[in-house]
Image (cartoon, rainbow, N blue to C red; front, side):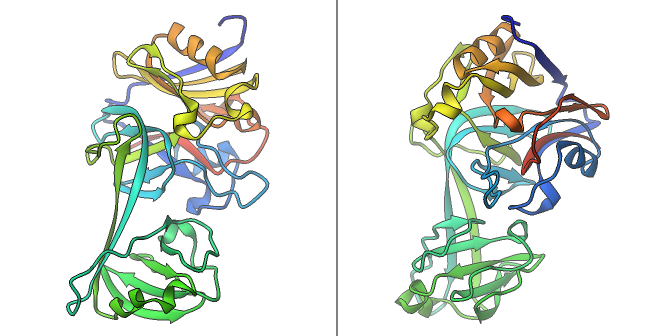
Length: 317
């Protein structure tokens, strides 16, 4: 296509026998595995590499992830949402994290959290850490409220296990010395959530119909037209936009079929032209370069040159 080798997999996401969702290597953020291993772990018939990540560093993602109705990681960019009946949506978006602890002696419940499953040593942070973060917290000077079934069951100093049926509220050493700590007690009800906000309109977007989602970017096609605004997505750097390199694309066509593409050499503008020529109406750039990989029916169509933190998988139900 346009002089470049292209591999394409088309998925009928409305087929009740399959399910499409993001997959996290080893089910833990900060780890990697081969695309083949991720595909096999999820019994996938097809898989493509996922969002950006800190390869060679902490391996944590740099794109939003939602699994089974709960966000696992927040970041701005283009977000692909996948519905339970195969409905698809794509938009430029960010996520707003909320956390409320209901102390019966205080009318204020908002905890103003900073991070979801993010590595940080900022002493003023409040983080929500779920089992995808790992088996335990990692910062010895923090104060941690352990939550099970939406109730605080314990408060610890330092490194704390993350319950499999709940999450931890981690407060940096500085934040733990502020009055906010006086509103956190064993027995208090605690609830966290995420709201999807459009980067184009600034308005909240109803997203409950899409229990699985992955973010990357920039957007390439928007309702059939080329629509590339990397600065709006925080992705305006040479490596993402202008480098002529291996590329991965996810999108869908007017029939609602999901499409995986890998392209041998392109920048995002060439990538968009190829996606449009192949009939996609919505498309976004995924992590590329050495991460570019496509797996179909037990074999590689495009072999990634490194282990990956995430993928998009097509599972048989």
